[in-house]
Length: 38
Image (cartoon, rainbow, N blue to C red; front, side):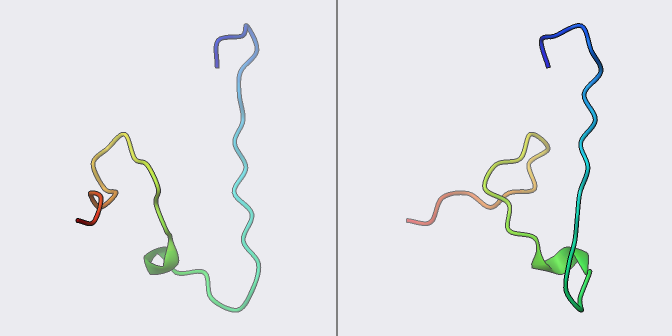
């Protein structure tokens, strides 16, 4: 966020299951995303 205003990110979930194990990460600054498959 290069602007002067604070940025708020809101996560919205719908459905019957709200577990953390159904997240598909494409990119992750903290090293949690799997590497590219070979």
